[in-house]
Image (cartoon, rainbow, N blue to C red):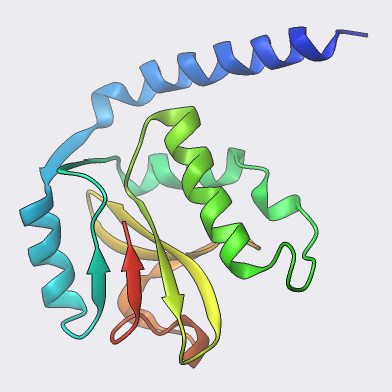
Length: 154
């Protein structure tokens, strides 16, 4: 059985390989361009930007990354590892493993929920990190997935 260190190194090499694989798919946009896109889609949202440039991939590539991510397999623990922790962890794993900063966190105080906003070449998508479900961000399947008027950290 491989040691924990060996498994960790093997995982690091896999992520480095996958970063090379998705590199040709990257599109870089400025914070100003993303600000404009978000203000058109969600004019009443409070958006907090973390970076000057954002690295986007195609929706197809993003779906692959979501499928590869293990966050959705983690158990929900009320107040200890709940919705905002899932959203934060997913954002961090995508940044760490693939060097992408196209995943934001939506804090929905109205619906008392947190989830991810994913910016891809094709537009804005919402992601429930607890299930891996992805849908167009404007679709808002319920009040708990409301984005406009809420807080977006990206």
